[in-house]
Image 1 (cartoon, rainbow, N blue to C red):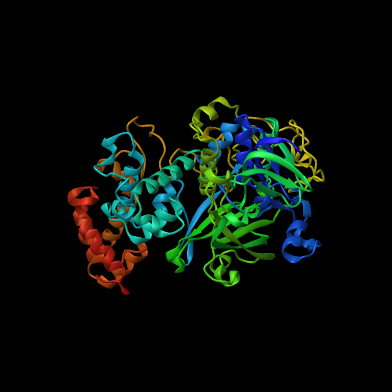
Image 2 (image 1 turned 30 degrees about the vertical axis):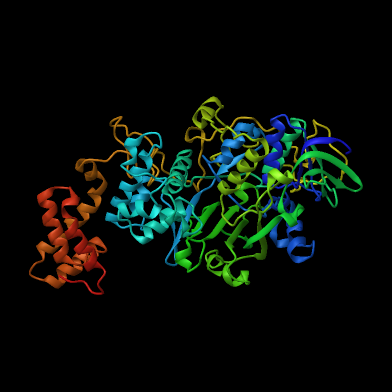
Length: 629
């Protein structure tokens, strides 16, 4: 151990392992140490025995929960944006050859006590109760602007400087309702609170574009992917990358102490009486507690269930976002669920997580709104952890400390922290300009599995050996050789292939994915229609003429026409007419307003914009307690 390294990395959490891999690829001599005897740190995945020991102080879980070693329960549960920076990092480093992924079935949002699917197809968007008919038209104009926006093309800016204009100002331009703003800001842009509204709109718009681009990678129900066997696979994969490029690993190293010289600069790390010299130290907050400050706390519930979350179409994997306003909180609450479909639990079992930034000292009470959405629970574990940010000046002490993982269920903020640290350590920006489409075209089409799952990476040709234990452990405390492959327990009975296929063309479906086979993805329609190279679909791209809208609204208009004809045929009995209208059209009970609206449509064909004031009157009437005629 008495050697000199360019960088010593302390802790094997995901952030530290990504940095270790990137720095090793850059040709730096890296020593990676951890006080634990397993990889992953706080971002590890635990089997059932480890889970029980951590939260119950016992290593004898109940037998009715299934095979112990088939559980891989994430301690930091997060999904991956399919077109996000973590995917670009995986491709950039070729770590994809160590991992298999699967698409997440759906993304949902909480509104007024119920959960609703975030639309992923045109049909879902038209049927979605998240917005009213005219609100969908207004939202569509906003989405057209977002999709067309190009930072390098001033014509697409429509006179708005997004580096100066706030998100609130750009939203007000399109007259969107509060519930729509809540939905867009939290379920699509994935902001944790409403502070973004008074900040420059550039980040807000880019986040929505990322969501749309990620959704475009698949013909499934969400923009997210998730690795088979849990997130504990990610740190191990980047650890392998570091080892391949000469990185040295030491686990189970007690009392790793950072050594400083007289000027306060880090010069090495001492453990068990041995000191390794270095130029820079990278670590998580637990290794240099005097150089960080507490900024918050995260409360989380880990639940084992025998069923999918209710009202999610029996999805095996979902995210549910509970916006802060819906709960009267200062920040959002998140639900994350995965199951045996991702090989994180025995068949028939589901793992659900409820997470939120702590605003009280009682996790049980604070997380109750999310837990109530889960239905019956077999076992539940509560835990909390403090969140820290570094306070040191890296240029003065050569210590680079990562921030604690937040409560969100996606990795964008995590990778942003990693890339920022990489730039500070190396003095250069990591080039992640990866052509994802080219990557998918150059890779072979994956073999279909029995369940036709939308695999990001070709799935294993055989299941993991029953002897597998996650997280991996090793009893060695001596340096690894440069070619060492961390975690021998993770060697598969069959090799993984190196193809990476993050595109709809290479994605297959299971019974829980969307049945839609077009490239139309709800609020974010993808490609050109078959009728013309210039035609785009529902909420995205080109502004349509009134003839385009005819198909969009034809079903709705026919419904009104039928209701009005029933009314006209029953004029002698107005009460019966009103009842007939209500029963025919469901919500149309204000017949006079509906008739005026229909007369307007008769005059202006299907150009509904000419009749908006009459439509608004009908909508207002519809809210009254009793039908009127």
